[in-house]
Length: 105
Image (cartoon, rainbow, N blue to C red):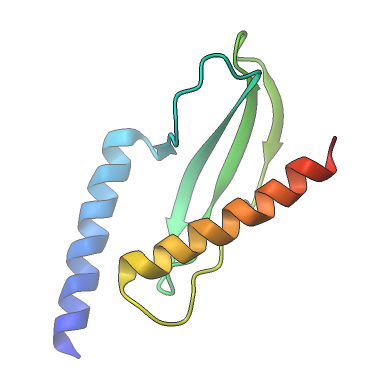
């Protein structure tokens, strides 16, 4: 429908402006006492609301890069609003990254 196309365009413009403002960096918390900091750099949100990006793990105290995870991508769900599908993509990404990190211990 025409309305959906308009919402998608407006949302894309807003997100583009927001990402430009934040330089594509997404912070999910502030934990200065944590040994490591994981930062997600969003590269793209495709038409299906799948998210694509890179994660960088740094030592919090020094800022030294410990690991870079390329192609840190999350798959969106099948039904729902733009933000619901995007939330599904980030949830999927979080689960995959959790498994990856816990398997590296």
